[in-house]
Structures are given as C-alpha cells and as structure tokens.
Length: 111
Image (tube, rainbow, N blue to C red; front, side, top):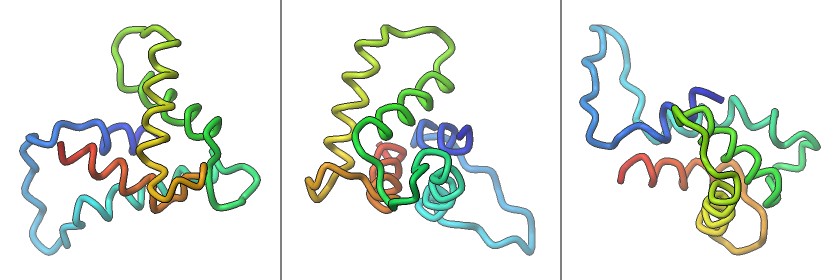
C-alpha cells in the first residue's frame, strides 16, 4: 500500500531521478496502474473486480493515514474519501474499478 501512497501523494513538481543506463523508464501512469494492481487484491477481497464506496473509503483513508505525519479528524478524512470516491467513479455506477482508481490517482499525482 505504501507504493500507492508514495506515487499518488508525491508532489507533481518533484524532480525525477535519472534512470540508470540500460533501464527502461516506465511512464508514471503505468507505475500508478502497477501499484494499484499490486495492492488491489487486499481491498477487493471478494474478487468482484471493483470497490464499493466502503472499500474505497477504507483504502483511501489508510493511504492518507500512512502519508500523514499527524493524526487527522476521522470525520474530515471520511468526508474527503467519500468525495474522492465520487470523483474516481467516472461512470457513476457506484463502483470503482482498478482502471478508474489508477486514472484518479494519476490525475491527482499530476496536480
């Protein structure tokens, strides 16, 4: 889960390190998708291929807690996570797929 927190919550203006010679640089959007894919099974426990609002809010709240040096008001965090679910659910079907979550995180990373 820390991979996603680092990728998604990193400042977009951060300077990227040079890749070692002979290593292929992976586009940031592919890094995000790979991180989501790696952690997805922990949160989509039934294997249905999507997260409902509760699962999404739980995952995003945990990511925020990992990335924050201090405790935050749980009500504010939940409100933020619910709004993030609304934004990530691009087709408004009350589910977030790995693709939607990756796109959402990648867009936040770029801001």
